[in-house]
Length: 157
Image (cartoon, rainbow, N blue to C red):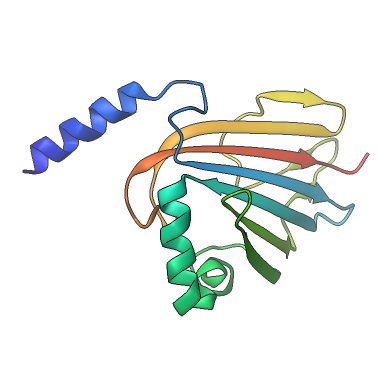
């Protein structure tokens, strides 16, 4: 049973391409960092139609479902003023929050601790990170699904 599950994961992972066609969850973040390293973060999490319907149903009974990640002990980061709403026209979850201590100014560069991947592109003070992976969590209803995460970070000039 476990071997069959692992084989299914390997075959699904091999099927992931660079396109967004097979993605079930598209996470897009815009992150604006001020001179103190405080980030104002907005996100748009676009879901497949079936996932969006299921998340909407859960949120109707449990309104805290979308913000619990930002209010618990799940992350080492501090989140201030988390807000989340459903956008039915776009089948998306819209989030916004502030994150103190998101980035640290070093002598001649900025350090962002929670970014293990290198930027896909840079342009002046703009960095774009993009990764595609098999993920699971609240938005995937804890199923392992193809996820694409795109983060644009704007650092102080």
